[in-house]
Structures are given as C-alpha cells and as structure tokens.
Image (cartoon, rainbow, N blue to C red; front, top):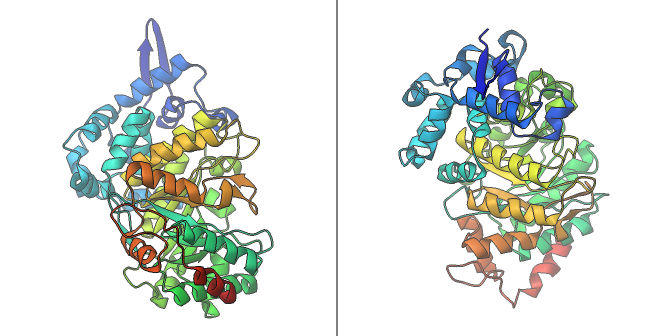
Length: 463
C-alpha cells in the first residue's frame, strides 16, 4: 500500500494510506474528531490537502478505501465503473482535475458524459481541495434531469418537497398542510410524508389519501410515504397506489445493514414500483435520503471520514436511477456537524458530489435545536445551494417539523429564492399553478392574491 507525504516548511507530514490522507484532508468537522480520523492541526490538514492534490485520480481504482471482498458498495463502485467515460480525465491528478472542472472545457455536456466514469471517492477527494465558490460553480454546470409526472432538474428551475408531517398522522392536519403548501407553490418534487407509524395499514391509508388528492386536482406531481422500503414493498403487494419508493441509504454495506437494507432489497423495490407503471412522463421511481455521519453513528465507517462515506452512498443511489436524492444535512446533530459553518460546507460538498456523479441532488437544509446553528445559517445555505443549481429543497410550515422536531426550510423560503434568483417550479407544475389560479400568469412565479376558495373546501372533503 502506498504512503503519501508533503512538507510544510521544514516539517514533513506522512500519511500511511489513501484512507488516512482523505480523512486528514477533510475540512474540520466534529464527526471526524469524534471518529479520531481528523487532522490534528490546520497545518497537517493543509499538508494532506496538498498531498491529495498531487495524487493521480486513477489511484482510487487500485486502492479501495473499504475492502472489495467484504463490502458490496465497494464492489458496486468498482464493477460498474465506466472506463471509457473516465478516459478524458484518467491522466489527471486530483489537483489537475479541480482545475479542469473549473475550466470552460468542463461544460454541461462534458460533465454529463464524465459522470459514469467517476467514483464517489474521486468526487469526495476533489471536493476536499475546493473552496465554497468552486463547489457552487461546478455544481451549477451539472444538469441532471429526471421525470415521473413532471420534469425535475431543468435549468432555471427549483422544485420543493411538500412535507406535511403530523405527529399522529391525522388526516385533517396533513390535508391542511398540503393545502397551505400548494397555495405557496410547493410540492412539485414530491408530496412526501414521514409517517408516525411504519405499520403497513397506516401507510396504505396515507398513500390512498395522497393519491386521491393528486387525482382529484390532477396535480402533476408524485407522492411518497417515507416508510421503510420493506413496508413499501408490502404495501405494493396489497395493491397500494405507490408512486415513489423511499429509503435512507449509506456508503458501506454495514451501514446499510443497520438500516435493514441491501442492494438486493432495493432492486426488488425498484422492480415492483416499475411494474405499477404509474409515471406519466418517466419511470424514475426511487427516492433516497442520505446524511454525513450516518455510517459513523452505526459504527460502520471503516475508519473513513464522514464526507467520503457520504459520497459512497451516492453510488448506491446512482445504481437505481432515482427521481430524487437529498442529503438531510444537519439532521443527525452537532456530534457530526457542530455549527452553521460546518453545516453550510457539508451541504455544498454533498450537493457538488451528488451532481458530479450524475444524481438529481436536493438538500434538506436543516439543523437540530441543540446545534450551534440558527435560521440565518439556513438562509445562507439555502441561497448558496439555489445559486449552485440545487434540484429541490423542503417545504414545511414555518420551517418547523412538528413530527420530527427539527428546523428546516419553509414554504415561504421557496418563494424567496424563486423571486430573488428568477427560478421557477417544474414546468408542468408551474402550468398547473397558473391554471388553478394559485400563481398569476406570467414569466415570473407570483402568488395570486385572489386564490380560489373552493380549492380548500374540496381538499377538506378528500381528507
């Protein structure tokens, strides 16, 4: 196994493995200190970043960070690597790759063609030597388009997940939140509920309710109940109207096992959802959520830094051609991302790596109440991600999820970034908003002051 080194002044820093080099090069965050893999000083971190910049990209194809023989995610990464797609950058070091990504040669077409040739570790490596503006610039050039009942990921568009969670899954409370969200132009990515119960009967009832609303109003969107994938498989076997299959995923086989899933189960779920043929525009039927720190919290990180583990989760997602992927960036807590500065950096890293690898990447811009963060930090990350071309964000009443007890983005936040940056909802959803009178006609999304009162009355009857 190769060793890596770099001198800073008269002091030589040596790193015993690529795994150690990656960890020591990562910008400081609490999770890596908790895992005892972080650089001991800013000087050591800079030395690691400089040594990483000198490392050939092809090194990641010969030195696995998690053993091939014992980890199915590693096997997936290596076995599905597209050598032909990788060829244009195969001669570059990590530092050269950064320079190429920032150059005019790395345009939308070139980045799209390159995505199958990149491994998650390559994406993670280059992100570690990039500034915030670099992460934004490159991600903004990546275009990933997916479809189910509407079209997500188009240039100049920002979608939202309408998240009508309720602590008791009360239909009236959920319906009220859905109405509130729709009247603010939210819901084009998905109307997705985190159920209070993973009971199949309860999940089926929620699926039926969402399906009735979407059909009643002919809304060009999709629904999802964020139950465990095995519960959703059972719901489909019972004939439930499942649009998207959800699952939290991670970057190692052991971490996914802690979630009760593996690649085989995800494949079974995808095939079951495809067999329902519920999409009208496309067949992207999977929805995945990730988050830095999940592998460490399961003691399944194999000594890797948490950001590299996170990027490896994107290989799992990419295998199943999802409609949506999002990093729930600050949800796990300050043990992994301590404050607003770390959350902002992590959100931009995750978005960059996901888009570079060819994923329709969104972000749950969020924090827990015991983190050293506040809504000002979330406004900063919201704005930066929107500039970076984020596919979608969350929409929740007042930014406060009353079921999951964390702080995220509100219905109003989507209006803010759409207004300030001239962004629009998905085109089919935008047309529906104008047709129903929620938005006024015109090129810029603007709420109609005279909203149709019948809308709310009928929705209440559906619930």
